[in-house]
Length: 154
Image 1 (spheres, helix red, strand yellow):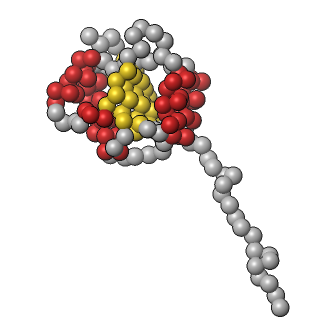
Image 2: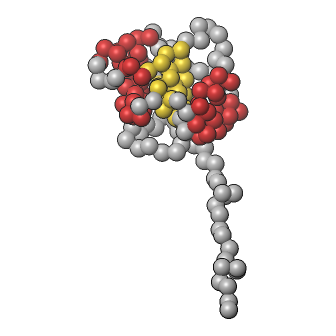
Image 3: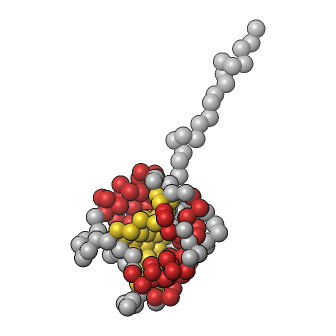
């Protein structure tokens, strides 16, 4: 008798996981949830910043998780609250108060997965740190969004 199970091999993709990191600039696609865990956006003015806050909160507020905003700009955030379009009960605001942003804390927040998005507002982040944050965001399935001001917002 021939045992066909003896020669049967199991094929596994466990060792073939492909890490995808994507850096988007000036591109916003609110309706598409992708696996690009890092999103870098350049902001030109106060109005555009308020729009970005609203779009991000609309996109990630549906996940029923926290949205962590690190050093958000006051006027744009007030515009978001005043609009009444967004449920602001799931938004956490953290200000570094003129201190350097601690990348280790951000990495921890990304890895835990308690937030649907972590937004870094006008942060100076090195390329190496962006790569580290991207890996942590992927691990925690948390979108990391860096908003960079190309002009000074007042």
